Length: 362
Ligand code: CA
Picture 1 (cartoon, rainbow, N blue to C red):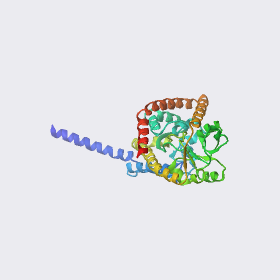
Picture 2 (cartoon, rainbow, N blue to C red):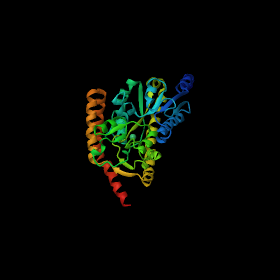
Picture 3 (tube, helix red, strand yellow):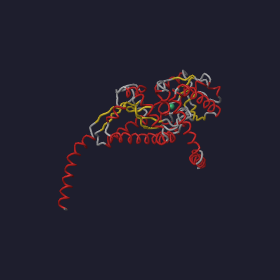
Picture 4 (cartoon, rainbow, N blue to C red):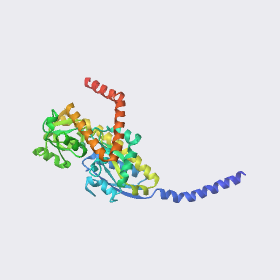
């Protein structure tokens, strides 16, 4: 009996082995993809998130799945990255969804809306609040599936040539600021302008514009704005925790073996974590150097914040009335944000505000 059982098992083992070999080879194919980033290499934290992602994918597949990263402009301009994914020019891109609000304002929710989530909250909404499923239902219309892949954390409110003491100081102010934030500020009198990163400094220097927002200390330091617009305002209420994404062409995604899909998803999580960590680690030193170099920190007056909050809510109501996708996701975001702050005002805020006061004593 024993011998017969052994033979049976051995035969079964051989048979399994004979079938399994080609199946394994098939599940680990050699694949090459191209990723176009919406960002230049000079934004090393954001562009670098794609390198972190591509390396994690290559390492997990013994280099069988390799994703080559291209900076903005090498294949397509940064703001055309999503189109390049939709039409299959590239398999994927790393981008900010709110660049595409001109196609549909619903794109804004993937990255940030004024007075939206902070970084922790957008992670919670995306991964555990149904947000990513809702966004992917929407992106499907553009042939895209998305995975969160980075965050800058709360941004700064930007650089101003003159101080802002009331809402009146915003009237006629020419500011480099894009997307939804520009439309909110337009409601309180700002003349919003879209200017590429490299052109901001000369525009501020010449006085063609009065103010400009960029990112936060780590990136702003490289551009030297404190020399031409010394008032450095906070917080950037239009970007409390803007999230970046890997956008992937759905047809290309469906061609991947399940294991590679899982690796892409996991590697996106790695990029999501590492990018935020790099900003958090880099910002304090950059802020110190900026202040030593002449930057003057200013908080936006509460009256300005409240006027902008009212303007943002008006814009959301107007947009939701015309766009059912926008309304569905806005309702989810607002409810989730309100619940988050219910919790935040207890332990999270209590801990941080307590530590900030203790630090001032040492
Ligand atoms: Ca910004």
